[in-house]
Image (cartoon, rainbow, N blue to C red; front, side, top):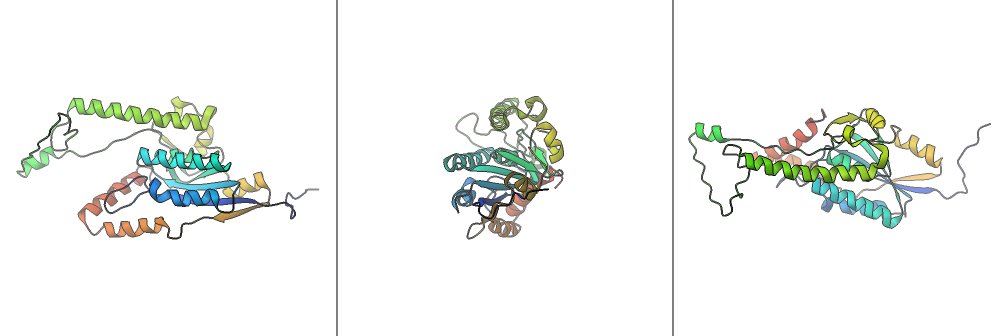
Length: 273
C-alpha cells in the first residue's frame, strides 16, 4: 500500500523561479546583454518574495564577459547565504562558458539530456585588416604615449609580445574560472577532464560531474519535496528580456548594430544553437 507524501496540514515550501537568458555582458551601444545591473533586481526578488526556501534559476546562455559572469554568480551566492535559501540551477538549451559559471551558483545543478554544458575556458577573437587597407589604399596613422597603447592593433601585423601578453591575461582569467568551478563542484569533477574548453551534453555532464541530474524540475521537486511545495515564477515589472528583444531589433538599423548582432550570434553558433 503506497502512502502519499502530500499532507494538507503541512505548510507548503515556497519555491521561486527566475530565468537568466542571453549573452553575458554589455554587447555595445545597441544590444544589452545579461549584466549584474539588469539582472540584480529580479535575482533579489527571487530571494525575498514570499520568503522562499528554494530558488530555481533557469539558465540559457552561451557565456560572454567573465567579469559580469562572476558578479552575477557572487550576487546569487551572497543572497543564498544571507537568506539561507537553497539554489537549484537548470541548464536550458545552453549553459556554457560564463553560462556554466552561473550554473555553478546552484547547490544542485540540473540539465536536460540534450542541453549543452561546460566550455570551461577563455577565448579571445578579433580581425586583421592590414592587407585590406593596403589593397584599397588606406594609410593607417596612430599616435600613442605609452609603448603598449596600440596593443593588438588590427591594422598591423600581429606582434609576438602582444600575443604573449594576451595569453598571460587569459591564463589568469582561466585559473580564476577553474578555481570557481572546482570550489563549487568540490570533488565531483576531474579538472583534467573538464577544464579544457570542451563542452558536452547534459547526459554526458552527469558522468563528468558537471551536473547532478537530468530530471525535469517538477520530477526533481516531487522527489525531494513531495507535493507540499508551491512554485512561483518571479518577473520584474518590466522584463529586461523584452528590452533585449527590442534592442536587438533596433540594432539592425545600423552597420554597428548589425555587427553587434552578428557578434551575439557567434556566441550561440559556437554550440550549434
